[in-house]
Length: 87
Image (cartoon, rainbow, N blue to C red; front, side, top):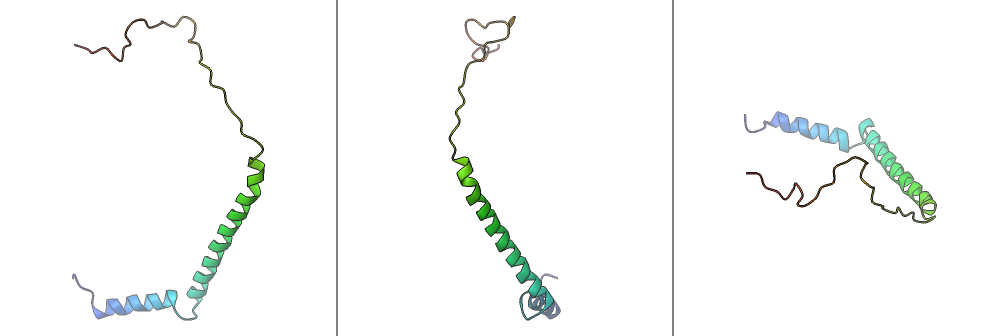
């Protein structure tokens, strides 16, 4: 049960030849699939090049300002609750 018989190896070789070898329909299909992936990557690269000038119009900065606490909120005085130990 642990080793493969000769029939298993023949089946594996037949599937490998069908997918990757010869002039079968599946090998043509795999070639077309690879061409499609390459053209997709090329299209993405062209889109990134076209978008770069639009992004370089200037950097925007956001000024950070402290937000005052809402009215009626208790103000902590002395040691904070995080530094106190219970018990």
